[in-house]
Amino acid sequence: MRSVAISPDGKTLASGSVDGTVKLWDLPTGEMLTSFLHSDVVTAVGFTADGRAVVGCSEARGMKLWDIYTGRLLHTMNGTQPIAFGADGIRMATSGGPRYIRLWNVAQGQLLKNLSIPSTNNNQRIEAIAFSQDGQTIAHAMRGESKILVWDVETWQVRHSLEKHSQAIKAIAISPDGKILASSSEDGKINLWDVGSGKLLRSIKGYGAIVFSPDSQQLVSVAEDNMIQLWQIYGSAIEQ
Image (cartoon, rainbow, N blue to C red):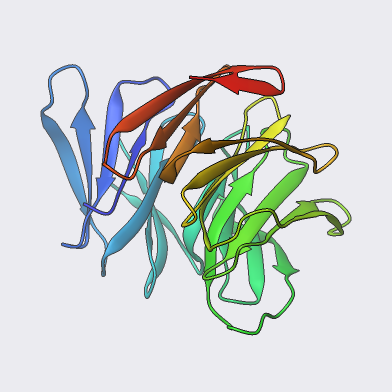
């Protein structure tokens, strides 16, 4: 397994694997529902907002979108991981290589914008992308770098450059209410930032994947000992 995602109604789980498949699982029973064949290792998966389609992403072979109920391949798109969905579940931000972020209407398989990002010394790929629920903010970090750039989607101007981590960024996430950006790093810290001001609110201990709860009140993270951590957020403060 390389990636998982849960459908909007909470009933189905999608998984992407090194065997080149996207599989759908019934969460109440644990039974496999169906399997879609990509052409390479599936490194990211996601659902459209209506839950009727699933996308599988391959680093070498792009993205494919399937109809869950008919099994029909709907679209093939030229983008790669990381991927992040906007609030409506229709717009999706993906990597377009080391120099671009691509913005898609995933339901139609249509490229909306090809957004240029600054070149970097290491010329590595994009490590992480986050897309705000209101569709106005995209944040990204490059592989091997400790800096996060926060962009205004409409003007494509940098709002903030967040640079308090001491080692490479591993994951970023924007809370559903759009107020907090969380970033995890190889330095063993998860930083919480105010999206509006770019101010660092607090640092907590954590590493690897991070995700906010739908109500923005909780943050799930991973500790170095592979324990799952659940944090309760109170405004700009956070407590375990």
